[in-house]
Image: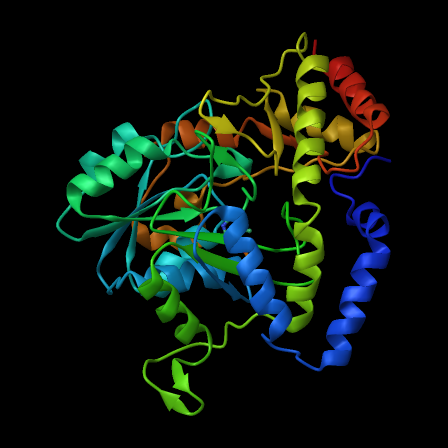
Length: 365
Ligand SMILES: *Cc1c(COP(=O)(O)O)cnc(C)c1O
């Protein structure tokens, strides 16, 4: 049995530190926000190389408040991708704005910047690229277009903690960046969590108010806000885990390299890392036209796999009202049928990677 993801191994490797931090947090009775969350905000902001971070209860909340902070209004348009988890698009819908999809680059499955300009209208206010699977989007051309047209750039970095673009950490590239600490992410809480990071003090101030009912002082509601605060315990947990993140990233990168080598002669495409990128392999996905067959056979052998994502957002029933149809985003659609994510977590062993690759080579040659 090789699971797709094993959170138990990570827990066991940091059990003492984690339990001490959780007990301390319990005893403090600061169950919501509080000192541990504030300390985590400072540490995560420093990690990303930006001055401000505001901790929230999920990555989805981070996207929602980031879009509100830039002043998005109902009817405004946001250019994004359909090759993502649904939350990216849901957040745009929450504020009554309209997601406008562009196709992705085949190599990285990230936003194809050459398609952006054709989609800009007088309603366009922002561009929302996703660093899919942990590989950064090609940000410089995106930022150049944004500057030219006066648009804001929000990074969906939910899958890309510690990833770099041209030597700069993701999170420091756009106007605001959003991270998720869903347990399976590269930095995961013991429950829900998310954070917004930004160099813009006004945005940080607005998001800080919006997460806590729009209050400037207790019971003084200056704006219509939300209950999007991070738990104290999650702040304590994330402080412990942040100290291990760099080592975990290195382990993921080593595993990816080993997969790449062992799959070199198999009839599958392995993920690419562009010159500008430091990929953090939140997901290690191969591509093959025999995807469904391969997945079935690996399952039979006790090897867990995933598909990220089988149905692009523009073809999801919930977003039919946006008016897209099959054929609108050819690269996104083609790759959704070919992607297969292999087991990937820092505690994977060489033996397990070899076993997975042996099975793949046995099915596909
Ligand atoms: C996980 C994820 C989110 C949402 O984060 P939650 O913490 O689950 O709300 C948003 N965007 C992408 C690309 C994600 O992978």
